[in-house]
Image 1 (cartoon, rainbow, N blue to C red):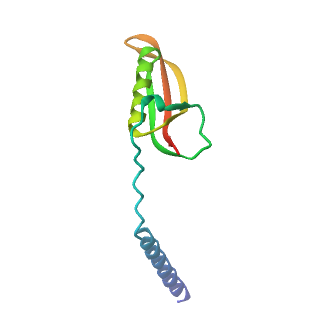
Image 2: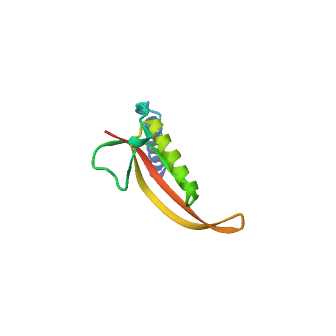
Image 3: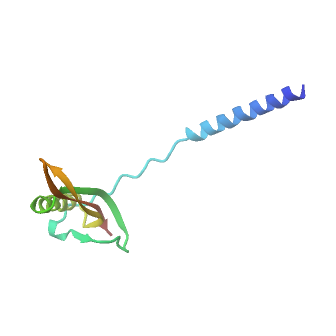
Length: 122
């Protein structure tokens, strides 16, 4: 008899706990504020930084360039700078820069992968 009462209490507690967790999960959440929009800037005004700045900044996007080393890479980097300038990013922070070998059309080629964080420095 005592075991049945203990089981009933345990089941009631479990049911109430589950209901409380569900109610907390369904609570209305505050919507995120809209992302900041910055006006386009000249491409020449975009700085390339090798480390995170000490001044406050807003993250805009992450850009990955993966191309054969040489003119293809420089062209892709130029395109990334233009895109950053259009978005209002005034700095590109270097996160990763690696070079590796890859077979392209049966030949070993050097490929370079660079990852930048495009930011707007305040």
